[in-house]
Length: 289
Ligand code: SIN
Image 1 (cartoon, rainbow, N blue to C red):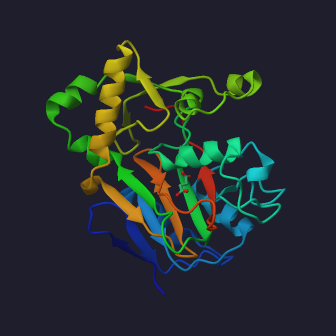
Image 2 (image 1 turned 180 degrees about the vertical axis):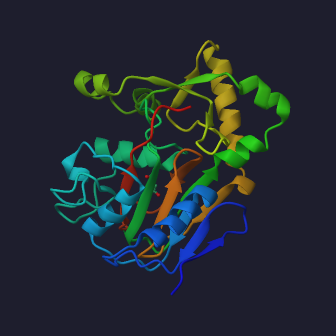
């Protein structure tokens, strides 16, 4: 079956058909179609994919080196630091986690708010490949916002006003905002606040807004004014014309370009219904341009 790309009507995102990711011999031509589709459409959906964890890592690595996640209890298996479990189910006990357990609460609050993955790092990641093993019958969709289209549609005056702004991204501020206790000083020291341009120039030359839940303030701007601007831009970028909502089926692989999209998980019955997704994340090429 040939590999074909089917763009979504909303103007970004596409479904790829004809790629069998469990095929151990994945050839360079298929990869090139996949890579180009990712560069063009920003969010890609592949249905009915059934592969092993190691295959998940292997085809993700075609896009570049993968991030290692810090906490072994969040890995897909004890020896797989490259796969993050995005789930309300504890891997070791196979039971639904306590919604008030601080680590779990921090993760669910964090992923349910609009965010750009690892924007609190000097080099945010390039993209992620999120795979569904168990999904709720209702709820738990993932939404994506096209930050390139949102930037392009801004009035020229606003583009000029924000062109040179630098935004502070701080993971610890995000925790404080959610009312979560601070992490240990050693952990905090590993992820100090960073600044990025508000407008990210992509390798293609296109520009995208870089905001999300870790964006706490703007350099040189009074706190309240900065907050208002960041909130206005978030509201602008998450209007229906810039967003795609993915309703999961078991066996879906959804891949996004983290440099020009934000995303969030939608609510579901966290305390009663199982949702087991797993994610690999491709390391970024360098600091935000
Ligand atoms: C994520 O933010 O990486 C996961 C989003 C989701 O759980 O839908």
